[in-house]
Length: 93
Image (tube, rainbow, N blue to C red):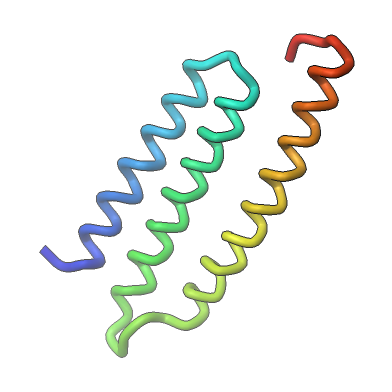
């Protein structure tokens, strides 16, 4: 089994497990973490696709993965702030 196939299987399993967790929990912080897990799974799938390029790793897909990591960190912080403000306001999400 090639490395790309292993990353593809692992990325799919991580994304599916994150999706299941996101659908089963009610806590907002747990949902935020589950969304991050889904994002990591999708980035693993992108890297698996990039690794299948005949001349090595596809540079464009690698750049997309790095950009995705930066966006994930930014939206995680934004989501954490929103969750905190909702909990301070006394509303139940």
